[in-house]
Image (cartoon, rainbow, N blue to C red; front, side, top):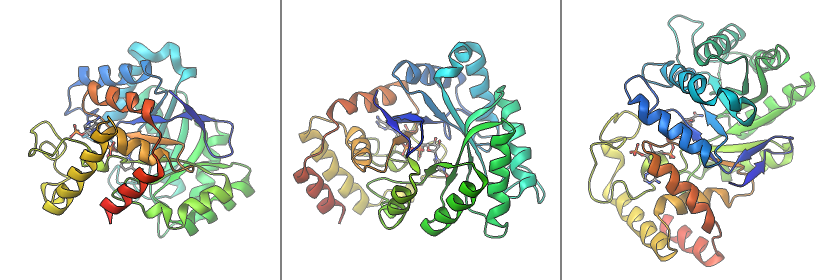
Length: 317
Ligand code: NDP
């Protein structure tokens, strides 16, 4: 597993990180979640990404990860980077979402309790809050680091200009902004339009979520909708209606190109995100151990030629 420096910080992240948004909740098979966590770590995936609301029900992914950690990974705490976030709806009333100091600090305390941890490595503000002053949210992140509840802080889903402001406020407080977590894949290239410049200028690292477009950029849906897939199961975040004929046609062309390279489409989609020098880690999700193994072995062929990159651009046009 290659480990990439996160922006201009001292922290290195694995080229592949594992996210626990889906398949670690109480509704899922615990033994499968445990196997995926252990296999990932054995393959050099040292970074596990959570959020207060992952499940369902909300909070259960953290609780299940905590159980897996306590039973099998406790001895390796110093080899792990564990992150969590607050920002989306978590509990009822006006203090259970967005970016107030009240919410952020209560949420990290709850997350630490659920996971049975003394601290997380990275704590994120999960989405921008249009109403709370950015100074208040960043002040909460700064406090969380100073109180030892997190080692580093990050932001997610922030636009370029907001990112620049957040970085400035945090720098003035003496807590650098370690990392940005944006969505990025062949199907969603918005970060190339301004954000990557800001991250480079500010020395902020990045870890990109949904690099497989939630499973679309794989061979999963080439022959219909499998019942054990994200569309066939949960169906809330990736919907049947997202798989249009046009999209399927693009996926098939990309799949052919990946086969010509001797790769699966999932492997090619991941190395494509990592070709961007701003991307320090691709944050994948998985429902099976074999998917994690597939992605990690794809790193053996991470080089994409100019010709291949141009072909991909043409397919995506
Ligand atoms: P991906 O785009 O990597 O999608 C993961 C899905 O792709 C898997 O569940 C599986 O689908 C399929 N898949 C994975 N590997 C393979 C393979 N080798 N072959 C075939 N199919 C494969 O990422 P996610 O959307 O799951 O997001 C990843 C993480 O990013 C989350 O867990 C979370 O930590 C983070 N995230 C952060 C957000 C934020 O706002 N900051 C928002 C969303 C995610 P199937 O289940 O159908 O088998």
